[in-house]
Length: 182
Image (cartoon, rainbow, N blue to C red):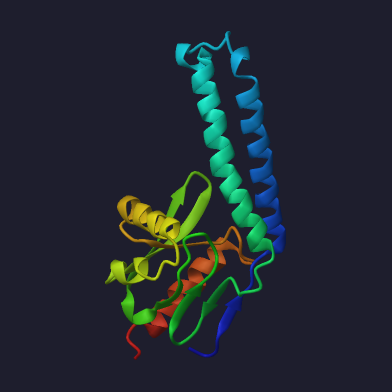
């Protein structure tokens, strides 16, 4: 590797995502407080106030969590993503684990869910990285990623000052350059 490549977090993107989470929390509060007003819904289960309140509570909890994470991330001074001779140091999302060594990476693939693209970092020993999780919630999130995608590690550009297509090329190029080194 020529030099260390640092990709900073995008405060603007994080602020927009946090505001979006706040708006969805407010929508959850609205659903909860207006649960009895859905008598004209075409599907019978959507007329049930308990179901509507359940959706409201789930929205408040999930988007409240993402909003808190986003608010904390706004003030995060760490670099979002670092590529160097050791590997990829990821601080881009809630399941980020820090350094992913080149020698542990077997393949890097791209996945798209709805409009969000992300890189899946397949490693030879996933449990090594799940074990690095500093909280039970992060470990659960990583195990969920493992079940769904076959790897606990993913990188998104939603919080980075970088275009996803360029990020994908850069990470693949650096992986090819460094996978047999060391």
